[in-house]
Image 1 (cartoon, one colour):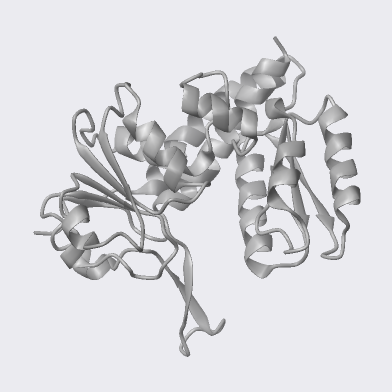
Image 2 (cartoon, helix red, strand yellow; image 1 turned 90 degrees about the horizontal axis):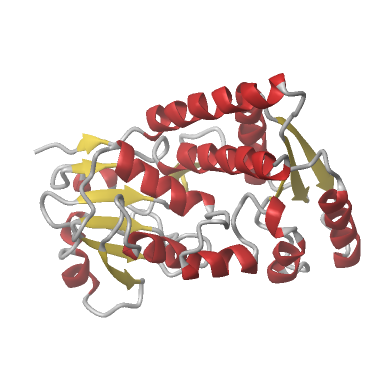
Length: 294
């Protein structure tokens, strides 16, 4: 048995085409969607992530720019920059690139972005709307992208048992809520587990849909997977690799070679969840623009 590959690049391309079509309609009306990334410091991974997001934004017709601040930027200065972008009618989406320096409190920074421009879905108002099932809020991009993988990959979800391994605020907790919603491409029974869950393999082997989102390289192996399950790998981890020019390589939370022999469907990593996160970010930016112009 060899798992069907859930190609996030192909699914993301489909969403980008839909976004580009709707952006073109706005451009014909003289409206240009505007997205601003705020990057604090020179973390190499953050620079690469923002560059990819800017490239995709250009491809679909969204105007984007990156505000780069030094790592020593005080909280007051960063909040002032966010306030300025909140007040700018040409800016429809604001994304704070993580990680922030340890001197800056994430909660205060994310909460300063206007909920109407919070296209990453991290603001407490949008998170609260998610919990309440209010569709007017923005969904966090990675969990929303995973739901799209399940939809576009034609993975049955209704009544299925989904196990999310990882309880983080960015992916694990919101994803568990989304999968449990009474909706066409959700309606799962959900177990939210983590690395300290006793007898974790006995839990994960019950999953029809298993999601690894705990940030531990190659943590989920064949012993964690029920034969025939769908496996979604969210993790992005660096492990040493002397054969790489960078001295490391990126791997997910799932041991892909072993798991693909028992799973029915699996996301590659890279090329699975990552492209979908960007696709949903741009889709959220388009929606923010459309909302602002109503």
